[in-house]
Image 1 (cartoon, rainbow, N blue to C red):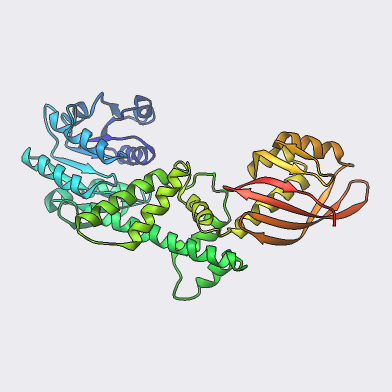
Image 2: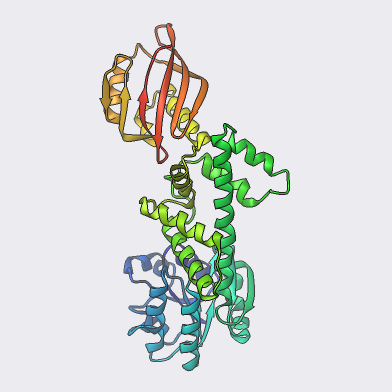
Length: 397
């Protein structure tokens, strides 16, 4: 069976690898030709357009980012339906507009092509597909799905797979949003939020989402871009709102999701993973992710103790400002490191004795052992913004 694959981003490339590993002949296309090189090296053939790819293919998969790209790939002037010979089945694996899927399914059917919407969650070859389309076409796809996924559910006719994926996104990110807001409230009240999340796992509120929050979000460096980027989730939330509007449904949950992820994009966090939305919630509602702030300060101290201040950029902003005990200020992280290093009396060791604070301001009592054997205590105030330490005020006890 000769298979085509359009769209070689992260997910598309994983799909291509799995299909090649299973022995399928694969032709690929991406608007960025450089993305084809990896799969071409593994045995795929590169086409110059969606139309050229579709000619002579039995089945064409698409994994592209935006609904407008799906329409262009299928019905555009150089799209699949303009090919010299049409494929039997087109499979859209992107998270798409329900209205667009129904429209494209109709256009394809009028040309004798089955259009199957099969959006995916997880990562091939261990993915989950939500499938909508003609049962005969879906049955023909089963051997291909078997090498891409662990779970494939045929939910009904055209558009049903898309509805399934959008509802999955609503439940997933709605649960995250509710859990994050609740834990932020706990943090503001002085409760250890990760500890509370662990305790809740022993009661009826337990969930896989709640289990992942302490490690992956509250205790994480939110700049490391793990998981889906916010710009893609924001797109999904807008498509979900479009679906609800088309069904004449009013949903406070959907409205809250659109608002939260839209604000995150407006804050320039589109390339960050979805956990970054916690910072938007914290800023908007003046809650503090106390546990995360404390971990930043702990890491700050660990790097000094390890004599690796050159790594402080992990947790401190480049524009970091240090307010010294004498009332002077040092601007810039590099200048701060040079100043403190120059004043040291040999290797030091810093012990954190106590934390206090909220809303991005953490007060820490430190016991500092100098290299000459002397020691002293200081109360330092740390300011944090967007997952970085931005200022420190030092003061002796």
